[in-house]
Image 1: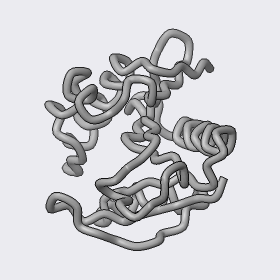
Image 2: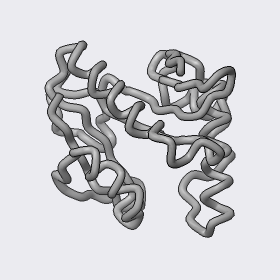
Image 3: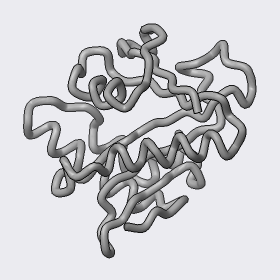
Image 4: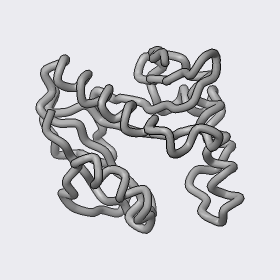
Length: 157
């Protein structure tokens, strides 16, 4: 297992594979067109990407942001790191990669002196919410952002 930073191309591949898999199961999450490296670069800093590799294959990713005013507008500066776009390649599901990525995000938040790791996720996705809740994240509210109902979660580092 290897963990790299800044590989938005590999992250895009994992995200697109996960999105297509979910769409095929009738549970669309992200439109694939929003997951190209070019589109991701518009909204996520290249340095925020973390990709986990098994051998030479990217099996999971997430992005860490320094701030997240869209979903957490009332947060003070440096209160948290904000997690977005956690995904595991469909061929690597069920092997603990999500938990590994979440542990890495918690470690990094603590290392940077951020008391919280925070995220938002679609309220209508109970299985996705269960991943975060099983890991220890606590729901701290809900809001509607750009027409999407999300649940906000935080975890102390």
